[in-house]
Length: 69
Image (cartoon, rainbow, N blue to C red; front, side, top):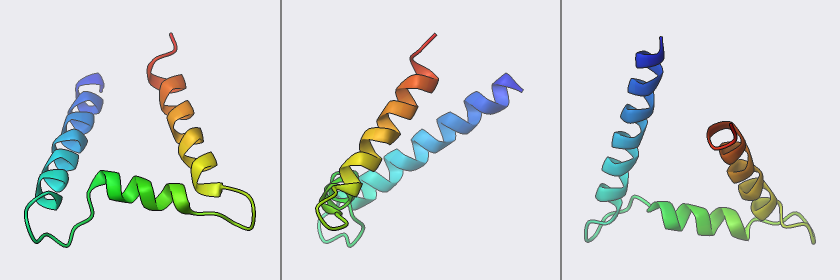
């Protein structure tokens, strides 16, 4: 079961790297990870920066689950 989980994470990283590589080719219409993050960071509902709060929450969740032991 552990090997399956590790394989899933490796597959996700390889897929992310492939999409990022495709996004950085000249003339590509695929947004890069930086473009997606910039779009999310600009999202607001009224005066509340929902995108920034959501991204902060995602990083907090990621750190809590993978770095806190």
